[in-house]
Length: 497
Image 1: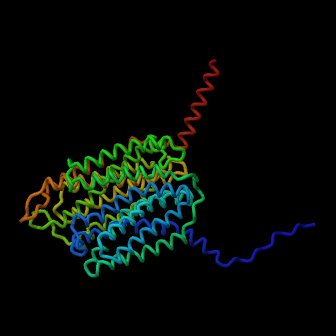
Image 2: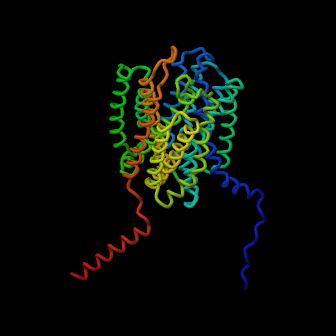
């Protein structure tokens, strides 16, 4: 008797929705990374006017940038670890929600204390990129993973390049609160899109959260970054700065001891100190230093008065437009970075990116008077940054277990942040030391700018050397040949015996 065939199921209405969500996962995550970078950048055009708008001093207003830097540095590894333990989409949505809440607070007030608190909340968004990269590893097939991770890594530069001219236009033609209402709307849209389009990752590593380790790391990072960011203003030899660095060293030593003895540490130091992971973090720190000097110096250089002999006297809107080609280049070159990593390995991509950054600074040293050369040099640096930043998470993904990708990528992003803070302090020190009066106002000399470019280029070459020191992957074919050679040698030895 024939067995009845399976009954055909009626079509289920709404089946295209899951497919649509799958197709939107990468664009939604990438838009979250761009939005995070935009949110960090939009306050920059406001800084000169905020003392007047808020009735506070310039030193107090600078904390709107410092607070975001500090909270982002602290929360990135903490939220990365929380994502590995409790669900990456859940923590990612919470980070975007905190960023949006901070933007709403900024839109509703002119009180500098509330503004600084709101900007500290927005620092949570620094964890968006490592969490998103970890989700992409868990959800995408290997053939799509490389290009998606490269795009996600490039969103930081793309958002920064888009955020500056956008914010400048809003500030110039509308009330400054309008800018935060706009970012609040975009943030709310990002939260809703992430919750709808991104599936919760099935890969997690449950356990008890290391509260003591989080508090220790937070104390050490706040002390370190506060000392680095405020050293020029308070004096590098002042008791406050020296005290902060002593606290950093003492707390880090105790934290390291505690992490090695913890059953569920916040940061697996045995994993982090492996040569492949550790050198990737060193390269991230050096690349962050080299990259950040480009945006920092270019903005000041092109806005310098023409009376200096080298300045172009551009407005903040025109300055943002000068950096825009670099952001577009990062978007275009991210697929190339993925292809190089797939064929040559991510460490070669990282080394190539660092070398291209150094070439960009060589262009800047050769000519920083003509606008087209300034844009060319800045774009070359942005291209190298795309290659380097796209390769770093791929190195991490290949070197760590799936259950720790968000936390280890969080540490890698933290190292970039520390590099950027050190770059800001070093560039500021160089430009302040090499200044000359223009009327009653001291302005950096062209020689000071060229020294800053040379310093950043030298750090980029150091990043290239660190990348080449990272152990490379053994190709599959090479691994099979090596096993065959070992087996053949063993057989020959047995025959000889």
